[in-house]
Length: 315
Image 1: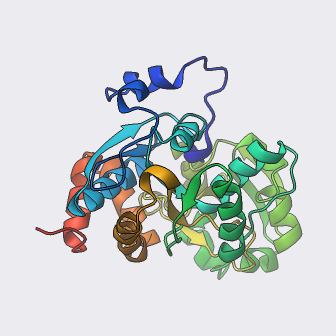
Image 2 (image 1 turned 60 degrees about the vertical axis):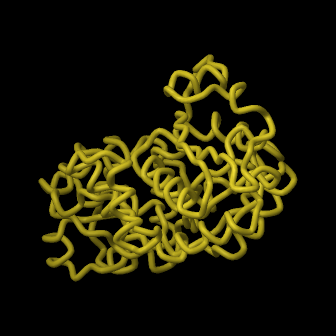
């Protein structure tokens, strides 16, 4: 998934990375931040569509609450999370399980026992503990999720009466799975599908996670199943449908705000973002992604239209 991508081998300073994005450098903002007292808030964003749109939405909601806001885009979590700890970035839209495991590895090593699961309450509890020790505050999670998911063609689903992954396992169909190469060993992918659902995966087709090529292969019938995400906005284009993860193989990656406790720990900030979090749905994420990726609208414009349509800001 894009949100967990690592800039492998990149040699870059964080300040330079920020400056390259066209915004203020971290030195210009200062280490302490100015989140409280209706001051400035810097909202961090990763470099993929959904994160950019969410950051723009956060910016508008917080501006409406009386703060000066701006969005700062960095490539990935490896760059923006340390800046969040230092208060150089104040607020970031995050994903519960992904951030929990990121901080778990950072705190306890890459082979640490997993703390995330399909139980969102337990996952957030573990995340809160890991985050607080780093000066971060985790705000409540909402119902919107962006997590791994599996899709089949509508035709294949109809022919075999499939609505869930359990249905696919019970159908005894031999399946060719389009996914990334890492799917061969990842618990949530091929091993999990086989063990949890009894799905007969005869071959792995390494076409990537939710890529056009992977989805086209399922549409054409070359493959029967594709690994994508719950907020994939192009499934209809390829005539695909998601199968429900009815035994909860995937971790709970609900969207939630994470803030620097010192620079953005105010109740007013939590209240403004809380209203948004309670409003945002997975279907909203799909539609927001579609407007940017398919309709080619700008994230800032999509964000403005969304907050107005949901009455999240004063018009």
